[in-house]
Each structure stands twice: as C-alpha cells, then as structure tokens.
Image (tube, rainbow over all chains, first blue to last red; front, side, top):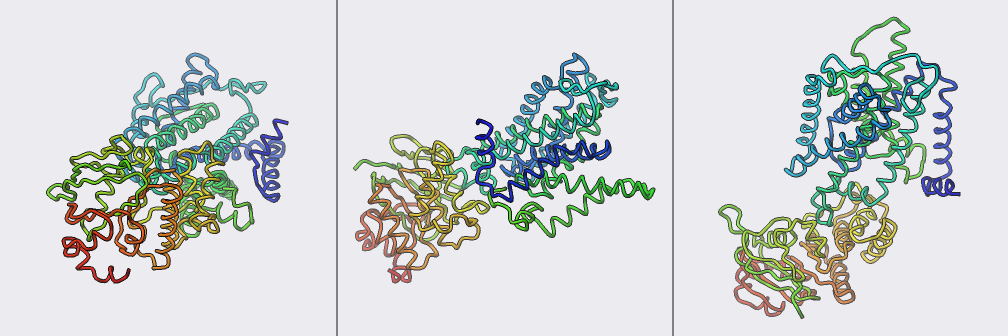
Length: 339
Length: 246
C-alpha cells in the first residue's frame, strides 16, 4: 500500500511509454550481473560511479548554476576519511560515511562561504574550486597520517563471501551498491528539483539579481547547493576507496578527476535528471569499447581515452549544446516532465 | 490615509556625482504614485534605493513602519515590496508558469499551492495560454506582463514598476493600465511607478512626483503637475512628442 503510493508519487504524471522505458532500463540494470562477465561488470561499475558523481555535481551546477571544477576534493575527502577510519580503527565504511559526509559538507561550506560572502562568482568561483582541490592534493601529499604521497592502502584479501557491511567482496556486490546509490541520487535529485529549493536554485541559475528581487535569499540557497552536492559526492569517495583499495593524493585529488566527473553531465545534459546518467553511459561505455578494440588489435596508445573524450565533447558542444538527453527525449517523444 | 512608504531626505552619491539629492515624499496606503522626470533625473536610482538594490548615502526610507534603507533586495521583497526591472529580467530558461511559481513560493505552503496562485495570476495578466512556453520565447510586452505577474506572486503590499509601459504600443499600454487599475481598486494594492509614458501617468496616477537632476521639483495631482511652470520647462516642454502621444 505504502509502496504503491511511493511508486505513484515517484512516477507522477509520466506517460506509459516513459514508464515502460524506465522499467526496461531498471530490469536490464538489475539483472546485468547474471549476464555480464567480470570485465563488463567492472565497466558497468565505472559507468555507474560516474553517473552517481555526475548527478552530485549536477545538483550544484545544473540546478543552481554554480560551476565547480574541483569536485575531486569531495571525492578525495570522502575516500580518505572512510579509508583512514577503516584501516586505523576498523570502522566499517557505512559508519565512516557518517564522518565522511560532514567533512565534505564542511569543506563545501567553507568554499561556498568564502565565494558567496565576498561575491566571487562565475569563472572566478570555478577557479576557486580548482584552487581548493589543488590545496588538498598538495596538502595530503605531505600529510603523514594518510601516508602522504606513499599512498593509503586498504587490506585486500580473498573473501569467501561478500561482506556488505565492510564493503569487502566481489564486483557483483560493488555493482549492486553503486547501482542502488545511483538510483537513490536520481530520486533525491528529482525530489530536490521539484521542491521549493529546486525552484529557487533554478531562479538563481537563470538570473541571480531577479531571484533576489523575488525575495530569495540567494546566499543561503547557494550554500545549500554546494553543501548538498558535496555531501552526495562524499559517498562516491567512500565507494572509490573501497573498490580500488588504494588512495594516492596525486591521483584522487587530480584536476583530471574533477573534469571526468563533469564530462558525463555536460555530454548528457547539464541541469537535466537523466543527462548525467546517459552521459556516463555514452562516455565511459564508448571509451571502454575503444579500449577493448585497441587491445584486440594489439594497439597501445597512451592518452587515446583523453583524445576520445575531447572528440566526444567537441561533437556534443557543436551539435547538441544542451546535451544528448534533451535531444533524445524529443526524438523518443518522451514525457516533457521527464527532465 | 497613512503613509505606506516614506522617503525622508534621501541622497545617493556616486563619487563626485550626486544622483539623488535630498528627496522626500510619502506614498499613502492604497495610492497610485508616479515618479516622472527627464532621462538621467535619477528615477531608477531612487527606485534601486527603495528596492534595496543599493543603499542610500544618507536619509531614511520607511516601509510599513520599519526602516528598509540598506536592507538587501531579498529582505525588502520579503517585507512586502516587490519590483519589476526597466530592462526586463524574467528567468529565461524557465517556463512562464515556473517563473511565477518562484515568486509565489515566497509565502506558499508547497509547490502545488504556489502553482495554483501562479495560474490565477497568469489568467489575470493574459498569459495563461502561454504558461508552458519558455520565458525567453515571449515577446517584450508579454515579458513585461510576466514580470508584473512574478512580482505580484510574492503578495506585495507595494508594487514598484520601473517603466513597465516603455516600448509598449498604445493598445498594449491601455491593457496594462486597465490591469494595474484593477489591482489597485479591487485588491487595494499600492503602486509606485516610474513612467515616461505620460498617457499612462495621466490615466493611472493619483499623485505625481517630478524629479530633475536628482531633486524633486514638483509634487501634486497629475493636473497640477503638468501645468507647473518648472515641470513644463525642464521636462514636458522639451518632450512635446510624448505629451502629444496622450
């Protein structure tokens, strides 16, 4: 009964073809581990990871119009906090998440406060976010408690069974964890977008001066955007740490990590709900296919993936500046409400 | 009638330039008050001071018994004083309906009731049929009406209109005049308008303040003001065309 009401609320005024498509997509994703081999499953995990992180970034930029080019900082903080608590004190990642989220949120709050209080906006705000990610990279490189540049390692052992509580186990388990997280992030994004806060964010994104004239406390709502985005991103970090089992500041906080996060939403459609997910599938999916094909022919071209990303971005920016999703939605004749 | 808005010897200086120089006036509750004057007289600056877009250099602005000078624009709006912009600023990427919902959310319990309020206003301003269009696709007259709708959605006690008639054709001006008059008479909304179009001022305003070079040179009923020698000399005399448009 409650379940039915929840489903009715979530699917609210969606057309039949849209619902069918969503159900088919859901079913395919849920049953994927039964068909996919380990390699394909790893690719799917990577796709969903970027879909998740892209959605988190999209809350800040897509909804509220605040461009972050340093989202790696929230991933890195989430990863390091949870990994440190696990390796030092044996604290399970789900409890570690309870510490990782406040840390990332506080970091977002500091960046947001400095920027919005002193009127740093637009590109200058973006540069500030890069600066903070770089601070973190260099800082963690010299932080002994996390083994500095030598890296932090999580104990890897062959586990007889999946331990969901401690996030130790097979790719299949990680797949379902990140799939659930991506679905949750989607539901959260949709709820935010359709509520008061979502309307105020979009007003700020469209015209901040007009938003203030409409009575919106723009400082407060921009702070909410950064903090919520940072909090959601923190889980991506926890997942990253426990999936890869190693953390190097030079890699985790690298600016290219931040850029990778935003490529999915940019290609799929900034500010849309499906864009970040679709973008992650297109980008990571095609890039991994390219990898496999090159491997098949014995080609080894370092940087081929980056070139490929560049080409994808170029095509989308030139042909579909609003992203692939708005275009696809029109082509498929899907419900206009499906953002 | 008591004063809803009271401006007391307000000045605004930009470095050496005195844009507003000791202007005082009172807008009674329920009035239709117009501020007119030649280009560069300081009308929009005065407006920005009242709406909280900038703080006055000196003087006091009181609204509904509270000081509002120096408050931020959003705080002023929450006090019950909504504005439109001379160069319209709708939210271009949002639908017409969503534009107004943003304003209505100021006081609405939830999005559903904000939408209900927004739709009522859109019917009133003849934008109901265009509610699903993006604001960016509207014509200028429609965008001006949308700005009025969005401002009204915040349920203001005082509506500040910055040249809302400018660039409208005479028939559209008459339509806007009718809408504003209805809002004033039926809903008791107090309106302060800056206007160049004398046709609208004469039709609407119960009271007119004339600004020139940042100072108030005349104040009174529209008839008194248009026959004031100082006003004719500084403003109306040199803009025959606009008077002729009446």
